[in-house]
Image 1 (cartoon, helix red, strand yellow):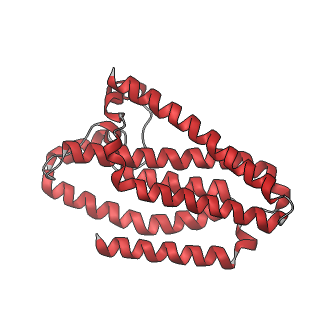
Image 2 (cartoon, one colour; image 1 turned 60 degrees about the horizontal axis):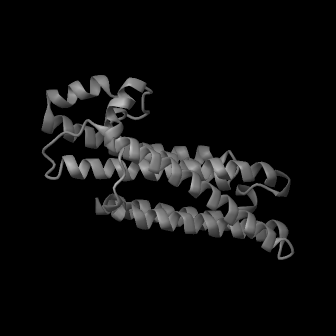
Image 3 (cartoon, one colour; image 1 turned 180 degrees about the vertical axis):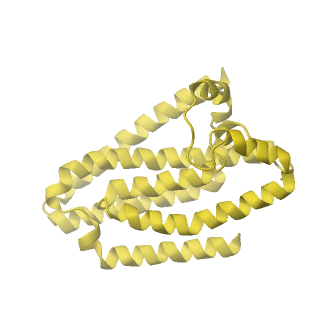
Length: 230
């Protein structure tokens, strides 16, 4: 675990350095700015959705499998065997959609697959050894990665998607750091494109977009949480 975190941390640092040095080629230019504002809203919503999925998946797992001896198959685990990794994919693609040119997504996907496919395979081999036939039966009805759309199942599992504030503890620092970094890159991008003259105008726009998206997200998650308790 520590080795994996160290590798991921090094890759993040390398990515930041590359973004700084190759910003001219990675960020959209001024002619694409209007379209980029709309894409930023979609991207931020994807980031929030990804973190929501990670938080709920981590919380459900901790609640139903505190000792590591129970196979968790409800909540997000009823739709995909790897909801946390799928949440990470949404976060990465959301950041790219909000900030970068479209082709950067291919670079991200290459790195993502190289890191997470071996990790997922190792973890599933361990689960197969631990739970045997129970895990194999679970694999027959639940996709390995991309969630299936099943509205009947969605209704049945809705109560497991409730959101508990105590679950945010482990993902919270990463969520805050992500949005601080995104905000900083939004500001840097606008300074690079427009200079100080339009900086205040663009800054207000960025704050408005972030606020608008957060209000939508809070409303959506509150609604989900309320329906999950009923």
